[in-house]
Each structure stands twice: as C-alpha cells, then as structure tokens.
Amino acid sequence: MSGMEIDLSGKVALVTGGSRGIGMAIAMSMAEKGARVAISGRKQENLDRAAADFKERDLQVLAVSANAGQAGQVDSLFSALDRELGGVDILVNNVGTNILTPSVAEADEGLFDKLMETNLKSAFLASAQAVKRMKKRGGGKIINISSIAARKAARGMGIYCVAKAGLEMLTKVLAQELAPDRINVNAVAPSVVKTRFSQPFWSNESILNEILKTIPMGRIAETSDVVGAVLFLASSLSDFITGEIINIDGGSLA
Image 1 (cartoon, rainbow, N blue to C red):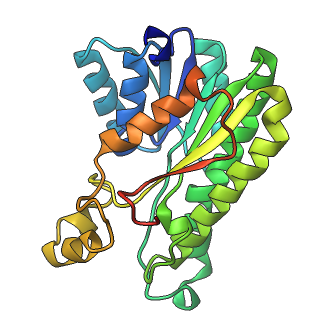
Image 2: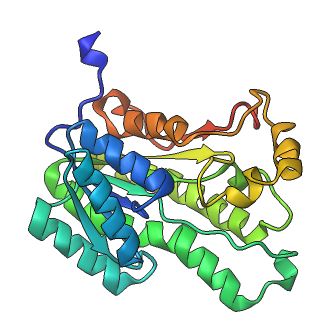
C-alpha cells in the first residue's frame, strides 16, 4: 500500500495561525511529510517559540509575522513566500478567534467586524493570493479550518457561528470556481479540540460534561484528529475531492 502513503515532498505549504495549537500541529506534520513549510501569526514571540520547536525536531520553517485580516500584510506575507520558498502549493486557512457574547443582538459593531475579519476575511485574502500562484503552478490545495459551529448554533458564540458558516460557503464557492484549474478547496469542521484556544470549555468539568453528552464517541478531539484529515486533503490522495466539509466531531452532527 506504499502508493497510499501521504508524501508532500516538493510542495510548499503555508499555515496561517500556525504558531501554536492546531495550526502548529498541522505545520509540523506537513514538514515531517516532506513539505517546505511557512507559518504566519500576529505575535512575533509565538512565532519565535514555534520556530525553536521546529528546529528542536530538525525541521525547517519560515515564520512570518502578519495580520491575516489585513490585505497589505497578507500581500507582504505572500511576497515573502515567493522570495524564500518560490510560491505556494498548499494553503491552510487556520487563523481564527472567538469572543463570547450574551447574544448577537447585544454585540457591538467592532466585535462583529473583528470576528468576521479573523475567521472569514482572512481566508478570503489568503486564498486570493494563493490562487494566483497555484494557477501558475498547475494546481494546488486550499484547506479551511471551520467548526461544527457553522451548522450548529450555539448561544454565546453567535457571531463565530455566522463567520464559520460563511467560511464553509466560501469553501464551496471557491471549489466550483477553481475546479477547472485543478485547485481543490475543502474544509474540516472540528468540534471542541483540546487546545489553549478552547481551554475555557474543556478545563471546566461541568461544561466539559455537558459537551461530552453531545459527542457519541465520548471524548473531545485532539489535535492529531484534525491533522490526519488535513494531511489527507493536502495530499494527492484527495485529488478528486473538492467542495467538501469533513466533520471531526465524534459523531456530534451525525
């Protein structure tokens, strides 16, 4: 079954929000599979820590500071990729954030804009830049990190739910538009993953127990659960798959 192994040798991958959590796990796994990897993030100290972790494992990474929701900074990010790595074959739109609010109606415009910029606009901006380069390279893979919140409304997370729903439709629209160019666009939609980002949910026993009641498999996701699906979508094994959303939720939406 050697032909079924995931091999990313010769590919250039960019993981936004790749300095920690799910993003870093994805980036490191792609490097281990042979890809030349770049990560982006807003905080230089997090990027420096991530780069040190890569070096400790004898892996190379290009770490670029950029706000993925700002067009000018995304332009500069991709210019750095062109200069240092020669372009991009795989884009993982992983950057995201959530700020709890009592209700959508009580949220202010600034909060709405922040969540839309980080969770949706960032993917639009990075994808637009990546597509220009992928077309010249004869194809590519775009993988968006969504959430089951895109299809499962949750109180306190309303704007996040709306943004992720938009991300999933962006996935499908781009998949249709880019199929003739051999650019696959898919998404993965995890439930709660055990990372620092979701710590308020899994570190509180009573909240965790309520979450577990909704997951038939009886546990929350680990980063490795997400990484496996993303590696598959980044590889040649998924060449005839596009416009799909893979739930990584232990059966929550089944």
